[in-house]
Image 1 (tube, one colour):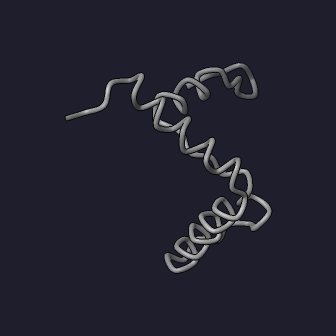
Image 2 (cartoon, rainbow, N blue to C red; image 1 turned 120 degrees about the vertical axis):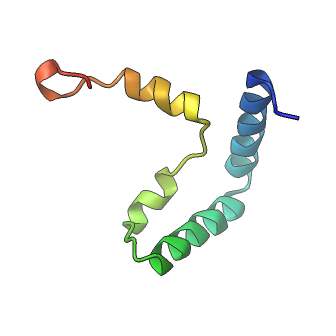
Length: 75
């Protein structure tokens, strides 16, 4: 059974909270993501790893809708 939008957001909030209160878990996940990307031939600056976040697609879409592109043209 699919989660409702509220349940999906609740799951992400719970995950973010766990990562925030457990820095070693966050570091382990970020290091694992870096290793997976490396195996796939994708380089990721280690300084960016702490900035990675978990989000649901709607959050990303909403955030991108608010971005003002140079020249005032949003695509």
